[in-house]
Length: 103
Image (tube, rainbow, N blue to C red; front, side, top):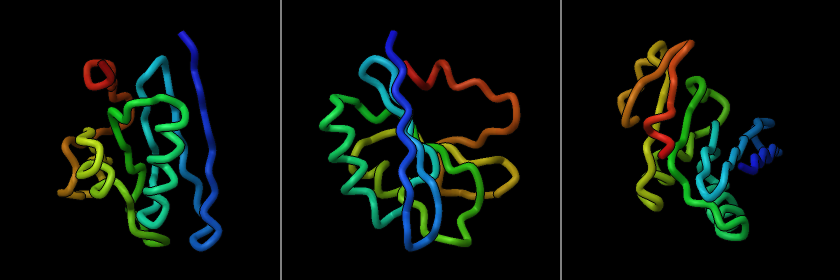
C-alpha cells in the first residue's frame, strides 16, 4: 500500500489544504473553493479517485470547496460535530474512524 500526502498552500487566505492518497483513493482536508479545479487536476494526474473531503473547522478565512467537490466528484463530506455545519454528509469528532467510508 502506497501512501501519498500533499500539502498545498493558498496565498490569498494563508491556509493549507492536504491531499492524502492510498492506492487509488484520496481524501482532501480543508479545501479552498477557488482551488477546486487545481485539486481535480492533481487528483487526475495522480490517478486518484476522491472518496472524502473533511473540513476540520469553520472557515472564517475562506469559503470551503467541499460542496463543489461533492458536486463534481460525488464524494462524502465530513464536518466536525462542534461546527454545527449542515452541508456535510456526516459529522465527526475526536476519535472518529473513517474506514468504512474509505472503501
